[in-house]
Image (cartoon, rainbow, N blue to C red; front, side):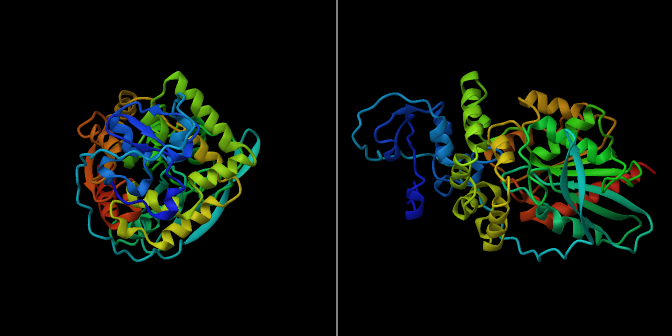
Length: 424
C-alpha cells in the first residue's frame, strides 16, 4: 500500500483489507462494515493510492466519501480505532504507454450557442466547428464528449483538427457539441437521466436550426464513453439516422452501480446521495469534496482517466477545475455518479444495442489498451459482436481521444474513408 500524502489523510475514510473487514478513523463512533466483495476493496482507497488503472473500477472511480456514504453499517465501540494493517494485495502490473507530446489544437473555425428547448425552457448549448476551406466534397462529423464530471469539447479538439487538416479527395467538417449541464453549455437544474440526454441528441440532429442541420443525411457520429452508447441506442430506435458511428472507449455503467450493483437497497442509497448533491447548500459542500477540487481531479486523471500519469498536466487539471465551478455544475454529476445516465442495465442489453445496427449503420469500436478492468471487459465484449463493423485498440484509458489524439484520429480517419467509399 502506498504511503498516503498528508493532504489525502483527510479524505481517507475507509481502509480496505483483503478479508473484507475495514475500520475508519473518520467513523470513530460509528460502524464497522463489510464490503460486498473482496475484489472491490481498492475502489474505497484514495484514488492515487490504488493499483494501476488496469485493476481499477470501470467508467469513473468512486470517491472514498461516496463509498463511506453508501456502506452498510453495524455498531462498534465508540473509542477511536486505529487503521488496521492492510494485508498484501496481488496487483497485475500493466506498463503505461509513453508520455504523449501533442501540441494544443488551434482555435476552432467557429463557436456558437444553439438553443435547445426542453419542457418549453430554453437551454443554451455550446458548440464549435473545425474545418478547412480547401475541399469541395465535405463530409460532416458530429463529435460528442465523454459524459463525466468534467466533460468538455476540449477533449476532441486535437482529433478534430487532425482529421479536417488532412488532404484528400474528401474533406471533413467537425462539429463538437457540449452536452446540456456540462462543459460550456448551460447547466439548469433538470432531472437528468439517459432519456433526457437521448432527447437532446435527437433534437440536435433533427432540428432545422441546429449546428448540424446541413449534414445532408451523411453525418457521422463520434462519441466517447456513455455518449457513444446513448448515440447507438438512439440510432437503434430509429430516432436518428447517422451514416456511421464511431464509439471511442464506450461505457454504459456509472461509477457507483458498477461497484455496488443495482439492488433495491442500493437504489435507495443512490437516491439519497443524489438528493444531497442537488441540495442548495449541503450539495455544494459535498460536490466540492467529491469532485470540485484540484487534488481530486488530478488523482482521478492519474489513476484511471489517463493511462500515463505524466500526461496529466497542471493546465489540464486547472481547465477541468474551472468547469466544476460553473453555476449548476453539480446536477449532471449527481445523475452520472448514481447511474441515472446509464443507457442500459446489463452487458446483454449493451450488446443488443449494437446488434440492432447490424447491416444498417457501420460501427467502429475504438478500445483503449489500458482502460480500467471492468470498462475494458465491456469494450472487449464488443470484439466480433453483431453490429460491430470494425474493432481497433489504441493507447490510453478512459479518455484516449485527449491523451493520445493522433492515434485516435488515425483510426477515425481510416474508418471515415472506408465508410464513405462504401457509400459511393
